[in-house]
Image (spheres, rainbow, N blue to C red):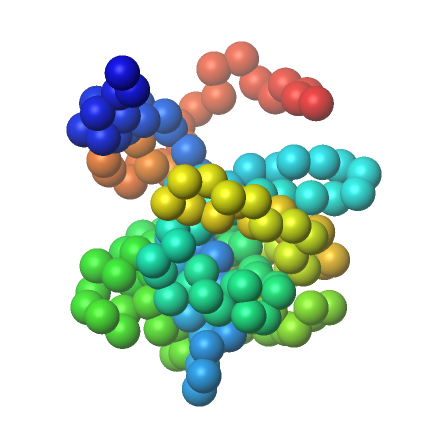
Length: 169
């Protein structure tokens, strides 16, 4: 018997991660969705994956436009994460008022974030109530600052390094 949804959620609260917002075009503006499932997939070619709930408007828009931006948030951008998560109302994930740019794919990327990726949809795979979108990174950039982190149901800031830098594959 599989774990219950509550058991699953409770266990995953213990996974600390960076906070990213996926952006795409919507009629008349841009839309964002805060995602907890985002990771790098391949260096050559450069690929990332995101997992988007099939019931969200962002899912339909990513399928339609075949492109999306990944915006990795700075530690002072909690309000953007909350908005894109829909915590400020039904149109809270509309991010039209935030400065954004367009690069290779034409997908909107936020101008003021820690790092960004401009992605074309390379593949889409069924993942239960989510779709796993594989994005080919067409352009990327970064800025200075610290990352916004999420752990145990709360936003966090990066503390002091334990051992210093490590090189991960």
